[in-house]
Length: 123
Image 1: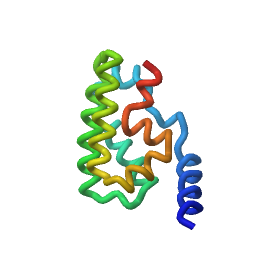
Image 2: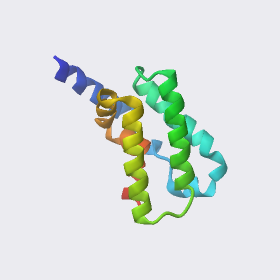
Image 3: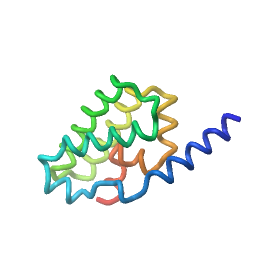
Image 4: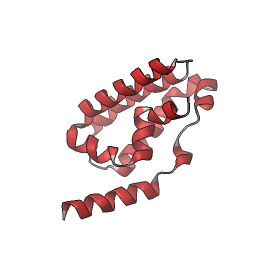
């Protein structure tokens, strides 16, 4: 039963998320003053798709996303981008806990946006 529910959630999340939701890296670089707005949008997407995210988790995630977008607004080497994504994965796991982190990671589009992996593939 749990697998059926998780499958349903996965399909539902995939339908609500699409590639258009990933902010283009050129836009991030040309708009470093919009880091806050980009971060708010990431938190909003997470909360819309995973209503079990608490307000305190949302605050920590917002701070993490600010760090991510600030870094993405600069020119990064591939190694620096890999380090950023690894750091984002570890920090979001710490904020969300293993179960919720695993659930979110099942939604590849959202997970890639949240951790910055989407930008690693487009380097």
